[in-house]
Image (tube, rainbow, N blue to C red; front, side, top):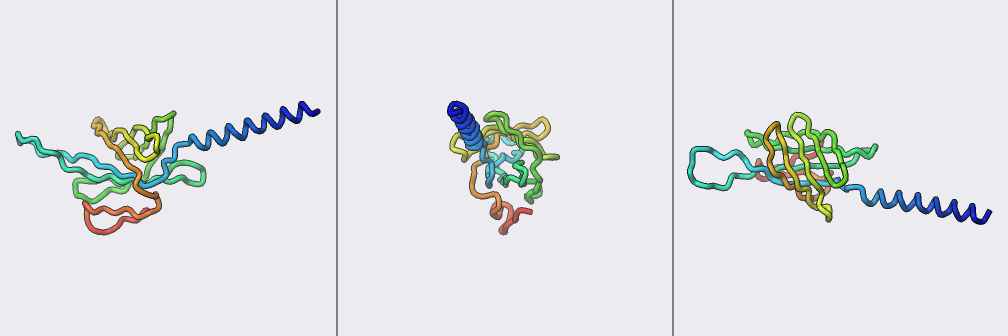
Amino acid sequence: MRIHTSSLLCAMLIVFLTGAVAAQSALPLDGKWEGTLPQKRATGSRELRQSPQSPVVVGISTDGDGRYIGEWLIPTAKRIPDIADIGEVTIDGDAIRINVPSHGVWEGKLSADGLTLAGEWRQGSKTTPLVLRRTGNADGPVTFSSFSPGTVAPR
């Protein structure tokens, strides 16, 4: 009986530790992420100019079912951000894919310190490098100083 109890306790300890390790290895994407996308440059000039940057702001949180949800604020030609709901977020090992329906897909990896998402933004056949840096909590207001003074609050 004593061997059976010891075996049962060992098995329970293994299950507990496995769950704890799995919980710690989950990628913590919740937060406010910011980066920039290059804008299209005017053609016809022979000068090499740095293209202007358009800010991108992403708010990611976890819903009650443990799925990632959020909003992706995308610059538009009118310099007014388009707020799009994030679709499916897929995590495969260290690879992350964030689908933004009707807008594009971001694919990349989370840094070991959890502060940087390095990858590419793809819209149709166009792919652009896009690095996002964690700048705060997803529930905080998002400001757009380069668009206009004011604040856009999460929906």
